[in-house]
Length: 419
Image 1: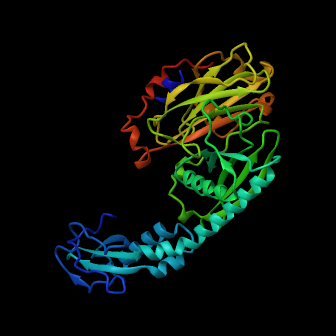
Image 2: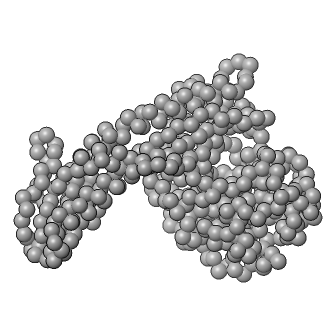
Image 3: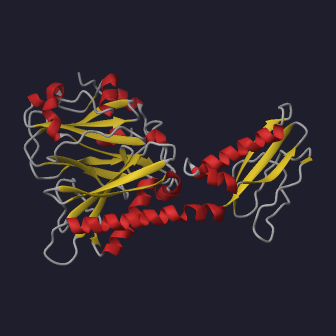
């Protein structure tokens, strides 16, 4: 049933190609202002090695070229700096083309790629140094008789959801940092539910990224190491949003509730926790105590919720991973996120209204919205909550999975209502 559920350069002012090029020093040389009937049609090409933005404004506007220039500068500045030291980026921008075709003005501005790379080199180096300190702290936190511990990097939660391009970028930096610490790093094993430590592993490292308040666009990633019997925070690091891969803010979600670690839910994913559109994976559930369980799939950004697994009147077998089935990750709405929430309790009464559910069914839309916010959940299940989720990725990293059509959501509406 799970498979059925989830299957459920800048275009320019566009003118004739400019004949202008960089001078011997590599600096872009702006054009002399001119009126040209072909100036704002076709494709305008910036000099090699530069980022560019182009803007237009009808000539009936007062100071049309100045208006277009400011718009182009604003777009390029915001794209490059993303809220971090934008005044410094603004000083690097130069005008490459300023012209009109008799009807509209078109202005192209550029910034040298080498300048941008140099501007962000130091924040990147500082982040790498911070991760090296975190890696050493993680190694020191793990009691071991001799040698270095074996560590596993698990999920990296980015503003409420696991995985994504930024999480994978951070995963790579942490992997390098752990290598410098001397620790052994291992891959996540198959069939692992996330409960306890995999065989041969002394620590599981998890990260969490949040956006920091303030005028500059900064992010903070905090790390904790799970040692089986205890969990310890091992450090944080902040960095400019602009040095990391772009993220779709529509995928930011409220964090789902977690209990005391007596129940776990996990799936095989890309580094950090994402899945490619079309990728097949398996969902695993495990509990350390006998509990009645209901597993809920939340899709979209409050669009809907389905109960996809129920133990009915029985409790889940303890300390034994249970497969909830293989499924193909397929986009099921405008927001490429899938989330899973476990509601469990040692008593069926502790499940409250969810106790009567004994199969796959569809929850009311209003309840779906509350569950996405982590609200209106049974108090008797508080210690036994568990959740996992993933971002759906596409692009070059996922080219091996080919083109996958979106899920047919009408199938979900054919499922029976839970009540």
